[in-house]
Image (tube, protein in one colour):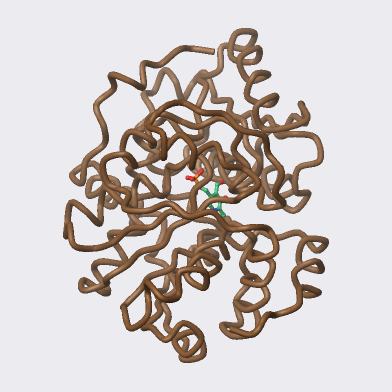
Length: 331
Ligand SMILES: Cc1ncc(COP(=O)(O)O)c(C=O)c1O
């Protein structure tokens, strides 16, 4: 796999996110930022849900894919691209590749969410099922890059992806400039890197909290220790199931992220169910993680104006069934 020096690479800036917004707006209208009185009551706070589940692929990642593909040099567009994904990143690349007429090969772990795999194929991507987990799929990308001359796209270490996804937070700040707290899910960290760099560059007083899966703590451990730490994966939240951290978003998170909390699968199941019942909206486990974190941090967010980035809604019927069966604790 082509080594890119993510340690020395310049970090994306607010200016890059603003430039990305010009591109992204051509293809995607801003997503709604809705308020639901029942969620306000649940958290005793002013709660805004950023509906990235309403994106055409059902997840925020499409912002990054479009920004990336729009700026890909013609020679690389002609070669085609290859990437590994547990789902939404792959959909984003597939969707953007179709928009710009680029060949896309997506390597997904065997046993990946079939809803996401079907969607990638429907956008015209070549989907290769390979490897037991994301890390194994990533390794296989290196072979395809070499054999077929494709341009490898890292799902985390690409400045254009980070700048693209950060546009969700620009939209939040345009609509609610005086937000106190933003809670954003973390898998590889690109979404939270974009969110925190935008929020802190615009107003350092905004608190940005990342939330990961307790069953996949690599990004958390790397953020906490400021050193590369891999960790096993045992979570049903596909979007948060990262076993090895990405250092480009980590460097941004080290600079800008205020806090990082982990939630269990049970908490995410409850949050999926609550979002369905109280906000009538479908979240996948990663997308519901910010609500799970807010419930856990209720004392800290009480009385504040908080934005929860509902990052995606691509849940499989089996996962949804599990969530609907989750007993709701008394809060
Ligand atoms: C729905 C959803 N939420 C959150 C994440 C985590 O995003 P990131 O990898 O940018 O941290 C992902 C990643 O694929 C996702 O699909």
